[in-house]
Image (cartoon, rainbow, N blue to C red; front, top):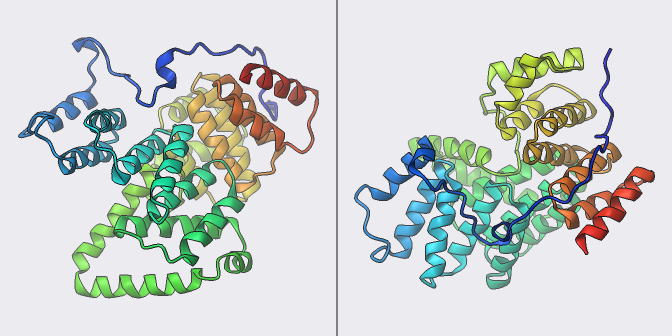
Length: 367
C-alpha cells in the first residue's frame, strides 16, 4: 500500500515575494475592473447602497450595523473597509478595535488578530471580549495551558459579559477545553467554573420559560458564531455534509485519497473539513492522522492557509506531536511567518538535522 511520508519533505525553500501592502493593517484586495467583480461583491454593494446615507452622514452605530451585516455574509474584506473609514474619521474605541480583531480572526490572520486583541486588552482591561478573543487565539496556536489560565482570570475576576453572544462564545470555549483537559484538572485550575455553569444553566432555563422563540433563535445564532470563528468548536448540532463525511470515511478506510476524494476536499472550506474530522468516531491519534493527511493535500495544491489551519487543529488534540510540529513549522516558513515558525520548531522535542537546518534558515530570514 502506498504510504505518504510522515512529514512534508522539503524540496525548496525560497523567501516569499512580499509587497509593502502585505504589512499594512488594512489590505486592498478588491478587483480593479468591473469584469472581476464577484457575486459576493455585488451582494456587498447592495448592502451598502440600498437606503444608506453617505459615509459622511453615517454614525458609529450605522457603521457597526454595516460591519455586522458584512460579517454575517462572510464578506470580511468589506468589513475591514468599513473599519478603515472609521479610523479615517478618528472614531476608534473599544468596540471598533474589537470588530477589527474579530474580523482578522475570521480571516485566519492570527498575527494581526493577536496584535489588536492586545491593544483592546490594554485599553479596556475589564472588557470580556479581549479575553475571549485571546483564548481563541491561544487555542489556535495550541497553547492550551495559557488558554486555561486566561479562562480562570476571566471567571475569577467576575468580569461582566456584555451580551448573549459573549455568553455563547464562552460556553463553546468551555466545551472545547472539556474535550482537552480532564475534569479534575479543569476544575482545579478554574475553581469558579462550576459556579458559572450552574448560574448559566439557570439563566437559560429562565429565558426559555419566558420566551421560547427567542431561545430557539439563540441556539441557531450559536451555530453561526461557531462556524465563523477561526477555532473549530465541535458541535453535535452541526449538520455535517454527507458527501464530505463519506469522502473522509473512504480516505480513512483506504489510507489514501483518489482523484475524486481530492477534488471534494479541495472544494470544501477547511473549517468544514475540520468539523467533519472532529465528528468522526475515532481516537485522537487517528484524527491527527487525518488532519495531517488532508493538510498535505491542501499543501500539494498550493493552499497553504488551509493546510496550516488543519495542522493547528491537530495540535489542539496533541500539542507535543513532533510530526505535526515539523509540518506546521515548515509551512509557516514557506508562508513567510518566520517568528511563528521558530516558536513551533523549537517546541519539537527530538530535532533531527532537517529541523535544525530549518531553524537556522528561519533565523537568518527573520533577521
